[in-house]
Amino acid sequence: MDQALDFHTAKALLEWQVELGADEAIGDVPINRYELEDTAPKPAPNADPGPVAVGAPPNPASPRARPELGPADAVADAERMAAAAADLGALRDAMAEFSHCDLKKGARSLVFADGGPAARVMIIGEAPGRDEDVQGKPFVGRAGQLLDRMFAAIEMGRAREDDGALYITNILPWRPPQNRDPSPDEMAMMLPFVKRHVALADPDILILMGNVSCQGILGRKGITRMRGQWTEALGKPVLPMFHPAYLLRNPIMKREAWADLLSLRARLEGEA
Image: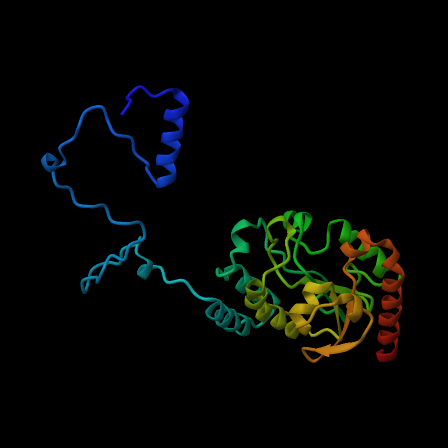
């Protein structure tokens, strides 16, 4: 066999060896592996350390020492913590202590609520955005400014202390990364807090802003079909509406939002 290989032939043979799975070149000096010292193999990462002796302290690196709750367990824990909250302050503290939602790790603020807790109308939005995460209040960005103008047109607002007051919160209290939609697991584990929030605030009417809030409270999506159609949930009359962020992208739909606001005002005046 000719030992003098040209560059292209040697390169082709090397690529063929790599395709076969070769990942180590042969050294210039041969190694007698029978003369190498025996060394114990290193344990694989996250390997099961085996049975722990009775009375021995748990190994922090062991998965057994750090059991993680599944989604159903996280929901049960949320239900327990929410039910134990006797008022809105205690509910906010319980949400701050809830550690099973990973969104909390990447968020700057817990966005709990804004407006008058005794308001007749409670708005439930979707999730905080960048501005909300910075200020710790719901609906303070461009969408929030539009929301304020919308309700001011029917003489309602979050700063009012009369029958025109609003109380505003979200399905999620923490901002999802890149403002993505919440996952079903995230919504499910935070929903007990939202339900308790509604029970403690006890508004006359709920406004669900956008698809995510409708999915969380009503269990279905399709805001284009649902908007303006009164329904009931959590023992309250519910009016789904377009999210202000959607209206910013689709200004032509503001006329439907105006019709919904007029429907809300008529409902409030009829129940006054």
